[in-house]
Image (cartoon, rainbow, N blue to C red; front, side, top):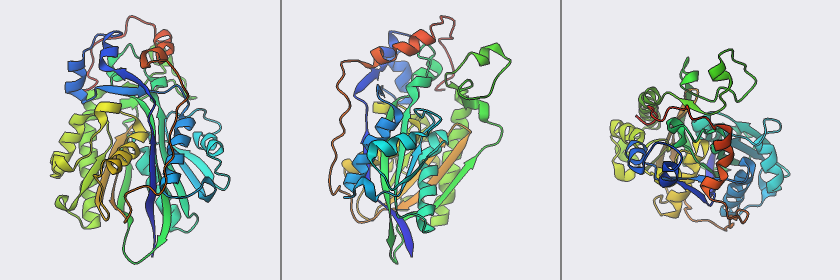
Length: 369
């Protein structure tokens, strides 16, 4: 039987750091306020474009699998912050990778995007149309953040992660065993960037706002429910219990959401991989970055049983069970190198501060409640 298994993995983490202490200098907040409500201590800010990070992480995943860019026949980039709407970030990344034999497209399901993409690419491989798929989550979210508004400014960061999926024909199941994707109707304005596309608004306050907006407490409540219930369903479909899970890799949006969802599932916290303190919420990139770091830290063993879960703007959700293969170390390596720069995170976000240079933005909010 044909399956799609992960044979390569990688990440691209921008070097510039924006710490909680940095944010204290530009808005009414504190490290204690941010840390206790979100679990975030710092986030990364990219000078390069979304497709640059996608290509870097993709190169690393291809090397880890012992392949070349020419072996890749499909590239799916999960992103809600592409370089351009036309062409896709995947098109730019394909050129930068030299993946001349690959079809390429973006998939935007916000923070659920990587799991959506993993499910789509798996089914394309199982269907026989492709054999070697590069699935990337890459985001430059700081471009859509108003750093004078702690509703969202404390949450988001930049980065990329990638996996290489390959077709295998064998009797023993491997790869995705069960999965689901969904979207809760009527929740579009709970988490959105109003002035980021072609839609126009008569309300002046909305019409002038291109930054990410969020109803924090309502998103929190729904996120916990979405992640827990969808994970329960995919576990049942795979015939697993919470005790069978070796490691859970959830979307890294808020440590309190992760804790609440995994408690509902009955998964011990020692089995839950969390790295949000270092990167914040990188949307579609959080799961592949976390997966790569879990492998680097030896948290995933051959044959391990994994659970993924995510939620995002839409509101979307996705969950999946994944049976890992035999190899947990890279065949080859690719050293990710960002262009040399002396700019700090605060330096890079100056354009945002100037664009959103209004002093009337509320300093208090329900962002992480």
